[in-house]
Each structure stands twice: as structure tokens, then as C-alpha cells.
Amino acid sequence: QYVPVKGDHVIGIVTAKAGDVFRLDVGGSEPASLSYLAFEGATKRNRPNVQVGDLIYGQFVVANKDMEPEMVCIDSSGKSSGMGIIGQDGFLFKVSLGLIRKLLAPKCEIIQELSQLYPFELVIGMNGRIWVKARTVQQTLIIVNILEACEYMTAEQRKQALAKLSGN
Amino acid sequence: SLSPGDTSVLAGLYGPAEAKVSKELPDRAALEVLLRPKVGLPGVLERSREQLLRQTCEAVVLGVLHPRTAISLVLQVLSDAGSLLSCCLNAACMALLDAGLPLATLFCGVTCALQPDGTILLDPTARQEQEARAILTFAIASSERKVLMATTKGSCSVEEMQQCLVAAQRAANVIFQFYRDSVRRRYSK
Image 1 (cartoon, chains in turn purple, green):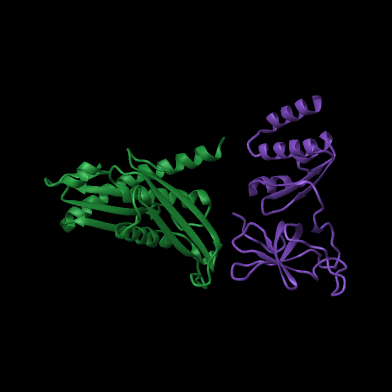
Image 2: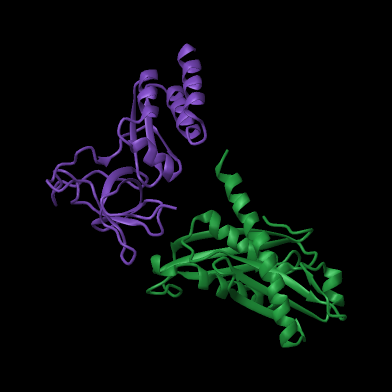
């Protein structure tokens, strides 16, 4: 199970709006809280358009065992740098935490090989969640299946599978 | 799902999850064990076994790492052919291992039956349990084989209990090896 850590970037699902604060499910033991002012360019007049069920990519500012975790979607300089509400369509799925760390290592081979297959958008959360969006639904599902199978495949088997797919 | 011989118990572990305000402890995780018998509603015997399991697990789980959370362990008895409590203990430990909860040590359960003529029988069947003079169940920790929990049904002398304990500690090695093999098989596809 995922344990929130300060500074980790995660994908959260909005479960409730309680006044000025959103409750997000991040896969830990407690829901995290996200203030509506923690977005780039958000003011009391200019609220972000967040609905229940939206996906949000953000980082933890407070995450210890005694308190409820808190997330924000801006970094220390006030810029969003890729964080915020994740767009429409796409596919969210869960993988093991070990695979996430493998994918986030610099120069990950899996991602390089996949990007030669089809163009796609990828968001990786340290809480085990990955969001993928490719041009068509079929391509998206193929990428999802490959990423899930990468858990157990060796590099050889992966190259074979990708060669078969790009041959098609 | 764990079965020595024909006794079989299915264990499911949920947590650490959000606890109800009435049940949460401010500095550690609140552990709850539910034991469901094969037929009928849980009765007093199940309740006492749940408390034994709960206290054993609380000694082992590092609850201080997850304050104000609830950890629920649900055990369903699939079939009972003797040595049920030690089967539940083993299933509980494997569930804790599989869920990845932080543990101070592993533990295993061993049942000894003391026969009327003085011989010690490990993991007795239901028949042997009925004929025995006393049945002792031990929960043994993996670090230095210390005793976490001991419960006795029947009467026996202190020396006999010590002998049963030594036999149980030796048997614990076999069980811990089984844990290792199971985990290895699980994570090496």
C-alpha cells in the first residue's frame, strides 16, 4: 500500500468538495486535502473548475504519519510545472510501486521503446497510478497492457512483444 | 489460504485504512480480528480466539507507524480437522506478510497434544485432540524462537509444558521455511 511522503508527485481522484477544500483519494490510509487556492493563477474570484471524479496530479506539502496529508498543484515558485487537473479521456490504472520507481528512473528503456511505437501522453504517480492517453482507444489499451505486463516480463520478452506490435 | 492436512483457513487483511473516530487510537493502529466459523454465527469461542489472535498480532505489528488507522483481519474457516488455532495464526502471519505491513518479527502457530501416556503429538487431528490429556497451542516468533502466546486446554505439569515448548520451537523452523518458500514463489514469476 502507498504511504504518503512529502514531495512525492501523485495522481489523486477527487471524492468530495468540502467548502474551500477538495478531498482526494491517493491510495493511502487517509484522503488528502487540496485547497482551491493551490493552483496556478487561482484567486478567490478565479476558482479552478474541479468536479468530483476528476483526476489531479499534484505533490505533497505535508505528509507524516500523524496528520492528514495535504497536496498542492503548484511548486515553490508558484508555477504549475505540469501539475493540476488531468484532461479528458485517457485511461487510469494501477501498478505496483516497484514498477513505478523503475519507470521514473532516468533514461528508462521501457518508456523510450514505447514512445517509438505510438505517440502518447503519460502521467506517473508515485502512489502506483498511471494515466495514459494515445490517439485512439485501441492504442491506449495496448500501451496499458504493455505497462502492466512489464512487471513480469524480462527485457527480451518486452522487445519481442513490441517488435510484434510495431510489425502489425 | 492455509491448510495443514485438512484444516483450511482463508485470511483477508484490510488496511491501514481510515478508522471510525470512536475506534481510532491517537498513537498507534487499531487492530481488529474477525473469525468466522464454517457454519453458524460466531459465538463465544470465536470471540476468545479473536482476542488471542489480536493480542498476538498487536505484539508484532508496528502500529506506531500508522496512528489513527484501522487494520482489519478477517479469517474464514473453510474446513476444520484439528489444530484450528495454529492454522489461524499461520494464516494471519501470511496475510500480514502479503499485505506488506511493517512487522517486528514473523510468528507461527504450533499445536501440541499431550497423550494420556505422555507422548507429544504435533499438529493433532480432531480425533487425537479429543483423546489427548491436554492441548497446548504456542505462537512462536521468528527472532530467537521466543514465545508470543501460549494457551492450554486440559491439565499438564510444568515439565511437560516445557517439553512441548521445545518440540514446538523445533517445528517452527519448518513453518518459517515454508513462509520463505511461499514468498519466494510469489515474487518470482
